[in-house]
Figure 1 (cartoon, rainbow, N blue to C red):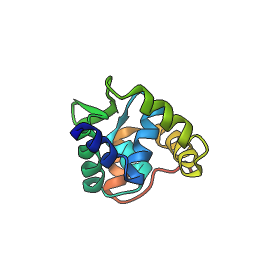
Figure 2: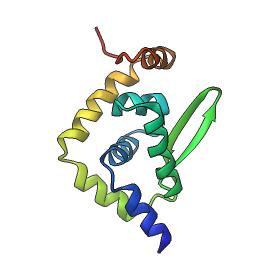
Figure 3: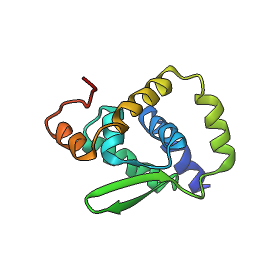
Figure 4: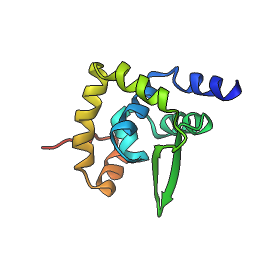
Length: 124
């Protein structure tokens, strides 16, 4: 029952739902890409990612100075199917997907540098 409560708590936040939706459409994302998509402070994103990891919905891997997140192999199939249907018509999720296209076109070093300067990565 505790694991079910952890999952419910993890999904009870719009930002965390947006992260899950983004990871459902991508194999993995760097934390800087997630931060840019959500337009939140890095510390806030870190807290959200910790909650998702505690619920065993996402896992991380470190590659040099980069931290990448992906859905866990144990991500519940029924939950995945339900979320895919429930979020399919969400305007916010569609906007995130468009934003991700722009973000993924950015060099990760440039993206992090821009975040440190509090500038958004936008195509000119």
